[in-house]
Amino acid sequence: MNRIVIFLLFCVGQLSWSQMQFYAESSKNNVHYNERFSVDFIMNFDGDNFEEPNFEASGFSVVFGPSQSISSSWINGKTSYTKTYSFVLKPNKKGLTIIKQAAIEYNGKVYKTAPIKINVIDGNDAPDPNTITPNKTNTSGLFLVADISNTSPYVNEPVTITYKLYFGYNLRITNDFGEISVPKYNNFWSQNFPITNFVGYEGSYKGNKMRYTILKKVVLYPQKAGLLQIDPLVLQIDYETVTGKTDFWGDPIGIRDSKRVSSGVQSLQIKPLPEAGKPADFAGAVGNFQFSMTPTRTSVKNGEPIDLELIVSGNGNLKLFNLPKPTADDELEIYDPEHKEQVVTNESGMTGKIIDKYTIIPQYKGNYAIKPVQFSYFDTQSKSYKTLSSKEIKIDVLDGPAPTGNNPKPNTANTATIKPKEPKTSAWWYSLIAVPILGVIAFVWLKKKKQKPVLEEAKTVVSERLSKIYLTEAKANLDNKDVFYVALEKALHNFLKAKLNIETSEMSKDTIRELLKAKKVDDTAISGFIKLMENSDMARYAPASSTAIHYDYDEAERLINTLEKQLS
Image (cartoon, rainbow, N blue to C red; front, side):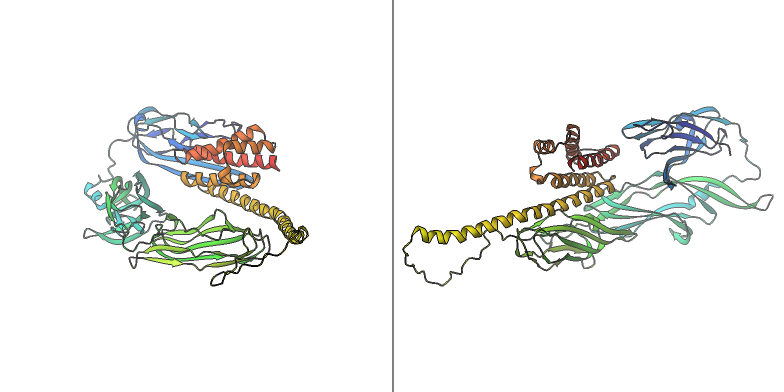
């Protein structure tokens, strides 16, 4: 089959014309009236906000599409990437016509394809004597049904919707399912499970024996109580009616047609979680869980980090609640956690575990405690709240300075107050007393001074590690604005903690500028870093496009690398 390929190449930044491609491709340039053909819009970059041409204005009906496909490869150290939007079209009029430009956005710029000329030529408009006009009553044997596992769940209790296509025994279904309207599942957390291998099953619909196939499944977690509605899934289904006749070669004759089917609006009555017995520390966990809090070690030297893991595992809305936070004696400094999710969402809901990994750095020698932590959840099986608790963890710090004011106070309970005799004193006697006291003070001061670099080095290592962790988390959430900017802000703050030895509370623009200037960082990098921090803070509370999010991530990587070199 001959194909017309019309290329329109654009430059982005420093890319050459040969590197950037966005073009339209038609399967035919001469199309018979009522014949179907395909049009693809192809790019070798990851564009956003695709805008299709007005096919109807050009004299075509969309039979199927848009469908999106992505392919990438790595061959001999070279990467290739292709993203395609595909349509199947059907002419509505004869003559020479033009499919106008498609548009795509990339890095804040809009790119367009060249128009495509299509010549719709005469076809045989008379019906084929060997075919039979479709019996429209057969199309009534095609139904799209949304099968809901639970129409009255609790808030954050999983619900599975299975979309089934029922069809009569005289119909053959193709794999061409054109999505006309797809539900957005407002007020639900959702996970789609598209079906790639369609299997036929025996069943019944409204008392009639029929066949059916499963098109897709969706797992939902309702996020608020009350009557919630789900918009219909609307599809254009291509099918073939079996006539029972055969052609000259003995092959069965079928009549091709298509029909638009809808699952209809679905309603769920979501029950609120009960107020009776709700623990004060309840954070929204619903399911069946286990909870633990475990340190990597309990005996350390001053300045040595301790990793503390809080883990919740089991079945339930694992991605939709926060873990409780640990508390400890003031002499144990607790850093922001590294959050990990090892969660699989299957057709019955989420299962796995979530982990908050804290780094703790002891400040002084002595014995300290990490307090018990409680985790509460709502158990949907028993329909009651349950609370799990960890044990207190004792930490023994073997080396380091003693904390200020840590000397034990004498036990004065039930003892008589005796006024001692005032001895005769002299300057020589005071000198004897003062010398050892001053010696002890000097010893403690010197030891603290010696220990301070150890603590600062440990804090720097932890902050550098957290900066990299949060930057990785930001990259993994480029399609989730809120999570992305929270992680990006933490990455930038921990980078400054590591490089400038300051706390988050001290990070004003003027302070950052002064400290970076003192370390001989150039003004361009300083201004860029401060602007990025401002963008990150503002974007959390304002709309941000996918292009802006990708730009901010790339800018963060570039500036951190620049500052790393200038501060080393």
